Image (tube, rainbow, N blue to C red):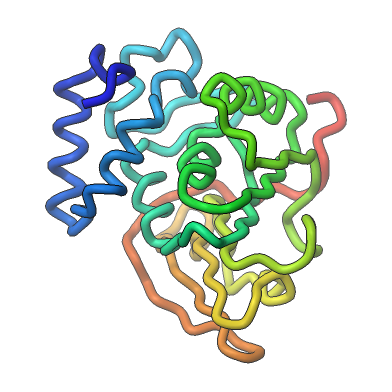
Length: 218
């Protein structure tokens, strides 16, 4: 167990057991999880709840997924060390940190400047230098720097987000959430095959719809 997790041994062990039950057992991936202290990414008043299986509020009226869900989404992305990743929705930066430990480079966008600045500070304290963060609207048009091996969006779409095809290499993978707001939603893995996606349903989840535009005040 990493030193960062010493304040949360029971919660982290419980998390690891739940992950093992669903087949996440790769020891390198487990060590990665232990190396990124989730408690450093939550608002200070929720510090003692950092590793619990619950959503938490954060700045700009946004919410954080439980760490277990974020870890499952990242695992589903099947990241390799040579990959470049587009993350739409930086949020707290926790998912960004996991991706940065796995991939060659990460390009992360968020519509909220406040969230980006806080995430930059957290990743800086962890010594992660392979991440570029930009305030941008990632809801429809291509963003970033060329094509990506992997794209991850932990927000929901009511139907298949076709614009992602334009940003993925052939054979690339996107992980996101499909389903109506307030209805049944599913985390899905979309593999680019020619001009279409092959869809694999992963697990039920609930996420807010991806917001459009750039937040002017925040």
